[in-house]
Length: 65
Image 1: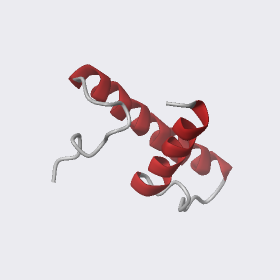
Image 2 (image 1 turned 30 degrees about the vertical axis):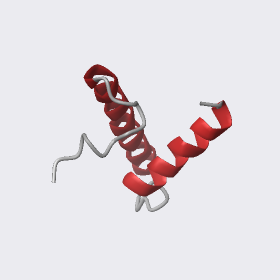
Image 3 (image 1 turned 120 degrees about the vertical axis):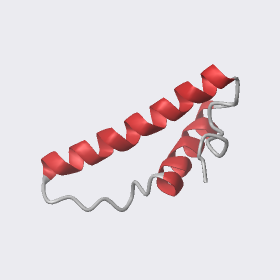
Image 4 (image 1 turned 120 degrees about the horizontal axis):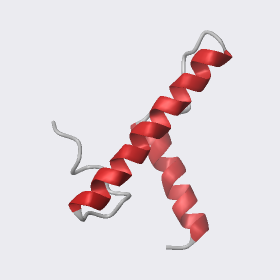
């Protein structure tokens, strides 16, 4: 996968799954923590997908409904 397409896919997933464009924070410290938690959750999802042998960008199998 080309780098530009991979970056666009990751940004799309962050906005869709984690609502990264809608962060309600009172100040810069809370805003920073919100971004860190969302990016950490994304990183853990890619790590779990790699362990399970799935594509690292496919999160639908990790979510239990």
